[in-house]
Image (cartoon, rainbow, N blue to C red; front, side):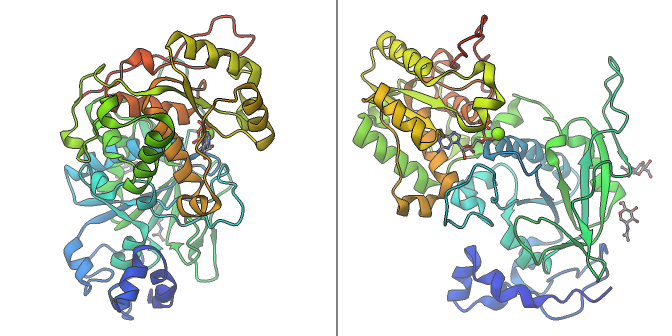
Length: 448
Ligand SMILES: Nc1nc2c(ncn2[C@@H]2O[C@H](COP(=O)(O)OP(=O)(O)O)[C@@H](O)[C@H]2O)c(=O)[nH]1
Ligand SMILES: *[C@@H]1O[C@H](CO)[C@@H](O)[C@H](O)[C@H]1NC(C)=O
Ligand SMILES: *[C@@H]1O[C@H](CO)[C@@H](O)[C@H](O)[C@H]1NC(C)=O
Ligand SMILES: [Mg+2]
């Protein structure tokens, strides 16, 4: 196996993201590992990686956890998987210094706006990194490249279920190294490195890939990471196979609250609220503390802006969840009755509907308000940022109704919980025309 020098990736690496700033400052060297030979793959020894770098010195001997999620999964399920992995990090931190490497965003099925570069997007474009860091230590992928000694991941574990399934009534938590069930999405190159989808970083390689059958919550994998492998960087692929450690518990909510949206997106949403929806934090009693650890509001204290917030999921949901998604006519009927009931003159609609459908919606509901980005805004904030702005505005409405089983709507529910809305104004959904028993989402309680 050739020595892991690999400094050729540096200029390209430095030309993007935070690296760009360092490059402009003439600090490219700080990003590029020295051309010295690296220790053999998987070695866990002092001096591994870019030990001479200031960043590495500051980083000490910490180990890196990376992860990815099944490609078809959307943005909002991925946000949920982050919570599970954060919980695993908290468990690991009880024994060793670990840091979570944030998986760059990109190539998501729903991000279809043409002509916009939507891969290798750092988390800081969507979330506030200092806020995340107040919960668990996290770094962007570019920082991992800079401080770990190059685009190599020592060990990739592909998580899968058990081939034999599980016998009914005998749920037990377990994890075992097993032959891969599905065809591996990684292949060896001529240097015996594993190539695959590493968030669009083509130069990244895996040194070893194996499969783990897992049945259980996130922290079940902690002993494997602590005892079975000494790899310094470990990636868990298909991390959605891990379940929550304590769904809805204190750690869950701390992590969820630490996922503060990036300020530039909140500002755009707030400005839109003010201009088009007569909604400001003072009047709405939705005061937001940037420091989530200081934000402890009582449920029911938030009033919200004088508008109905609606999330109307369309596209793949129209055929994917046929029974519980309303027709446009059905949705408008419901919207009108809610506006009347809650004495609201304005309605804000977040939707992924295609143009033909939004045109029809506008005909049926001429007073509706949408956040329609200009091309420049779309290029700047990207599909992910626009979705966050939509969610932020829905989260501030006096009354909200979402779409059944949409994780996009679920994340709005949580945001409203954090802001202090009465659950009755939050946990509402549209019903399908033929649904006989239209159950509403169950609400849950924030735990501090
Ligand atoms: N801007 C915007 N995008 C949306 C809206 N609804 C859905 N989307 C897009 O479609 C994706 C839906 O996928 P996902 O996040 O998995 O949520 P789910 O499929 O509804 O559970 C989102 O991530 C957005 O990219 C919306 O109301 N506004
Ligand atoms: C981890 O190591 C223990 C002890 O050697 C072994 O019993 C177990 O099967 C290993 N687990 C995995 C997932 O490799
Ligand atoms: C690859 O990882 C597996 C599972 O941890 C391990 O058994 C195997 O020895 C590793 N192979 C190499 C070449 O390090
Ligand atoms: Mg989805």
